[in-house]
Image (cartoon, rainbow, N blue to C red; front, side, top):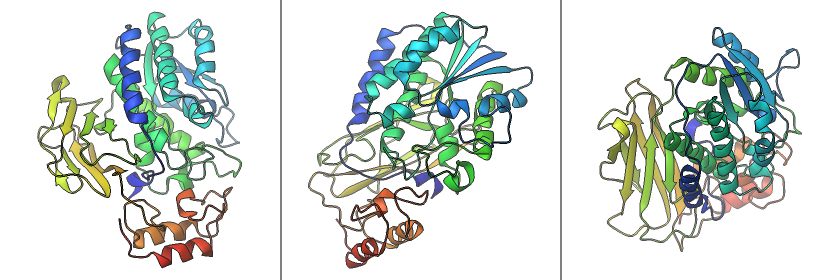
Length: 392
């Protein structure tokens, strides 16, 4: 269940298709790729999460960069994180950082773009330009995905937009032949994630790691730089997007999965759409990328769940709910907290975990606040109880 924490449905999210187009445009416009090399002096570039906000106050040097130096022998990492920065501001200052000595760029930015309403196409383009400038300056660029946002984050608390952007960053790295560091995968599969790996202050509007969280973040970067494969094949495209609504009943499903380490084991991948297995995928890139273009044999209806299982030759397994979307005409019953089309015990459990929490509390879950009052309370429980057992 830990890997499914961030799956939910809220409104219309056409971002996956838009991000797919944006990725294609970015690849055409920016034709400079990075060459593989063993770095010895990296610039950690990003926002407050790179800067180390939320870290153990006893640490003299906060964030993942000093920890990364400890994990990779001989590596120097300069922390160039700036709090609250968005990618347009990052693009404006990247040249100054690239003028400094170094041979690699660790690029992790974009969560503030979501909070400030910057279009995903703009975010992706800016990230690609920053990485391209690094390559042009002789620095090896590494794209990093974002970490999950808190369930009480002021914007995108259910991580729908965040997951779409994460997939687009993965796709961009694959298309450009750049290294990928995937904190989203490492963080989102941890049990008790927000309780054990995140800063506990109520004033945090997005979600920052605490000391153990920065330890984990540094380990994810170190694995990539050391060539240690600990990440399974991950989704890089999903259409309809997770969280989409009013999807046509005859919609086709497009899914891509990429492994950034070893090859995906032949025959291990199984995509299930609405309970029916899809045909075998097309295999590309020497077994590292899979593609499904699936037209269900019967019209879709209600809430459609997609699950995906695959593993790579290093033994890393992806096996979980990939996403859900709502077919046009389906009405989600009130009380369906997880938006799977039914009001069941799982909804009651999720509401119970947030019961008594207000919008500023770390336990607050916007999807469990069924009446939108800013408090998960008895009124919400009454709504769920009145609809218990209802389905699409």
